[in-house]
Length: 292
Ligand SMILES: C[S@@+](CC[C@H](N)C(=O)[O-])C[C@H]1O[C@@H](n2cnc3c(N)ncnc32)[C@H](O)[C@@H]1O
Image 1 (cartoon, helix red, strand yellow):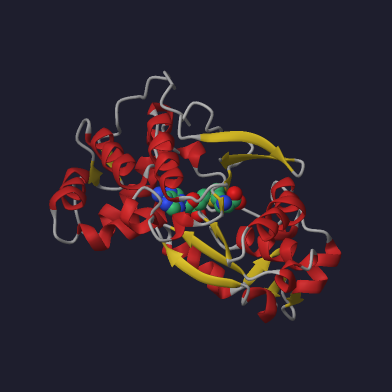
Image 2 (cartoon, rainbow, N blue to C red; image 1 turned 180 degrees about the horizontal axis):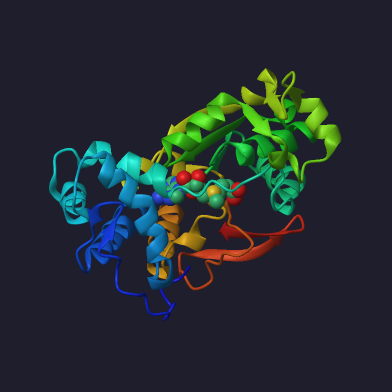
């Protein structure tokens, strides 16, 4: 997943489903993608990028991938095309209660600490939220701890993929989304959809999420407003970024976050080399990056 892969990529297939792929075109698209979305495809994963981009170029009626590259780079239509690229590249693997330690720490230590210290509304931001399981898990954890009665708390949810947000707004989840959530919590906050292996989020829980917005985390203008949140969950996104991309985003978040500000990243991710001014601390039994 990192830029460090040294597996040589086989010469690009010249013709996929009738679409010509001139030499180096995939590499050019890779550069555009990492600049626009932060997601990096190393040589060993260029075929994944190809398989996701080729259908978009074909839908556009091109017979060469190079024309699609020019569209993304120079054309006035690029602004409407990038959201389609994001949807095509979006990996929305997520589930309720994923990496539970963070939710426990949030409810037992982080938010109670903030309540004691701040005499104002507390803001929590989940980016990327994918189809919504993460922000809804945050709301469940806070509700179970009675914290919505104790403080004024906002929860915001964002993702760069409109398709992911559409799923979140649909409010329905299949069995796999619940693989980690205790059954008692599923019964309490969700209602089974008749004759289906699906559950609908209860209106009370859903209404705890103050906003669902499309935000590209690598765009400083788009993140400016919500990056001032007291707690940010940014989990399982940096694994797709280059170290330089992680550093840029982490520094930008740090620039806006208050002190203390709490940043939760995925278990497989690290900001230790990012030099963004966060300390990795154990808070309430979980490892959290804290802007002091
Ligand atoms: C694996 S999910 C992570 C969901 C959740 N945070 C979790 O840990 O379960 C990754 C999400 O990142 C989103 N994403 C990818 N690039 C993004 C970007 N530049 N800005 C915001 N979201 C992005 C994708 O659309 C996808 O929904």
